Image (tube, rainbow, N blue to C red):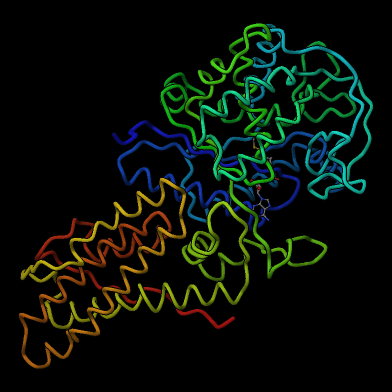
Length: 501
Ligand code: MSP
């Protein structure tokens, strides 16, 4: 039976140390794609996004900007909200970790951890990367840098620790029960190898700066990842929301591959720690606490074949390209180009080729030709002669469901393109304009009926990727279900041409 549970879909909350780049827009667009897809199937989906505002990295950036941390956060959080809106990301909530609903929630969680015996005081001696906001073991340091390539510094400071090491065995046992916990499988294997190496206790507080959630009665603030992960629960700020979109729901966390470890190791451990003591910890507790969780990881975007970086000057500004091409084109390219889960390469050439070759020349051309004839020769209505035809029998939605159950986003889009190509072939073979010209009105109308039916299927299937296209084509059909005789509204242009790369 199909899973009909409500679904909570989350994006990572974005660090506000700088302005959004294309990688941030990407995660949110994928999350939005899935939430639209599930909603289309009648499932209740809650799309959560927001900003991660505490920690040393943000504090340092604020200082550099000569601003107070909170003014700096206000300024940049607004940019993240704006990019989500401009990317047509229909989020249900945008949480900021500086909000009271979040900070008090995290403090409550901290107390529960203490009560359950998971926290002890010690001294952290080791490597820390401010850029990654992560602690690294000596064995992970390569050429004086973190595995991510980020610079690290040696830290010695008093710290509270979380007994993460107790989780090594239980996590490994539980992972075996949940082969689909992390997508894609290969990355899950990497994660298991990391855990097999043995987990160290985790430093979960800092006392050498103050931009964080205070631990009451101490001079410490809570480690930014402990703080951040709980946004997924603190945002569900009424008992009804918590029950509907956590307790009884499926939870899909979309994250980039670089932050898998936090979501697939720390987060399950944190959730389980709320429900047991170190003595009663087991794989069963993990199962109970995390049974509904899935971590879906995606790859990174390269720009013209290279890692994006400010110093190389090859970062792609999402505001700029959306301003230039519109959100549908940008969404289309980002969803269509990479094999989901793996790295993608953003090149101007690939962008132009896909938009022109696939959207404009395939889907766009089909719509343009069909609508023109429907208006000119069929009285601006879906013809009433309704023949049966193999194109109308294709279960495009079913095909998409099968592919998307395995996160094959690009292949799902390809299925729509292949279908549109078949409809275009029908146009070539039957030449409906010639039929009308030759006075074969009935045959012409039959062809137009089939083509309009095909367009209707296409706009539904592609809707999660292209919300604007879906809206405009739905308006042509009077926002009604497809049926013989319904009136068709005019549409000036299906897709705008774009300049060659
Ligand atoms: N604040 C943490 C997340 C906390 S979630 C409880 C964080 N923020 S981030 O702003 O640095 O990154 C957010 C997301 O952007 C991550 O999923 C990351 O993978 C993604 N990307 C950052 N650069 C990227 C690319 N070049 N390409 C694709 N995604 C990338 O991590």
